[in-house]
Image 1 (cartoon, rainbow, N blue to C red):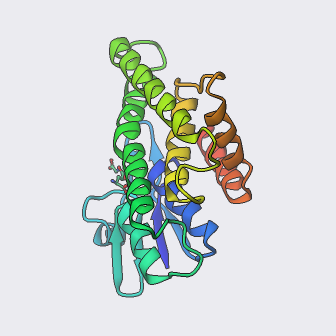
Image 2 (cartoon, rainbow, N blue to C red):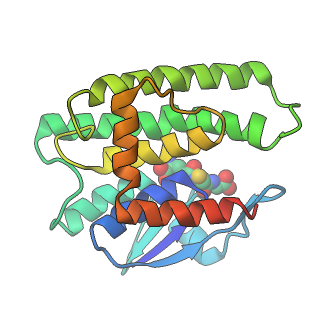
Length: 213
Ligand SMILES: N[C@@H](CCC(=O)N[C@@H](CS)C(=O)NCC(=O)O)C(=O)O
């Protein structure tokens, strides 16, 4: 399988971790990112697999799948051993909702932190928008902490919901929305995930890549 990814894309990191945790082998082809041109250049071969021009996209034989969620759902169906998503309907629905909250709510706030903070390090960014996003992320951290009280993971097993949320939370943390220390269940969960060998290796690569942009 070929995985079109971006080293600094949380959506790509989520799929890389997911596939490595499951022992699914793939060739990684990265689309570069820089502050001036953002994502690109994008080769035709990539655009053929990803009609939105977004990473990640997966090519498995004749099939091209775009969007991180569609990718892991496909992989759960096509390669059912050693799953990383619950199968019971209730747990599966909850897992998908936590994943969606990270992908769509947390990620939107991260975009604001990147656009108004990281890209404008001289303080010229929209400070009100930054403040709103940090505050919304803190509310989400509190929800996550409540969910994790008495549980090691967001669902009934280590799952794609944990991986997705972990990646968003880690990006948010480094971009100006740190984890409050009083949210002990959330901090313990974060440390638990960061200690997983696959996750730790991925984080090291991302940090090294981030230092170069
Ligand atoms: N919903 C998509 C979002 C993917 C996405 O937004 N990818 C960004 C990188 S983090 C991208 O490729 N952007 C391309 C561009 O802006 O040109 C997913 O889950 O895969």
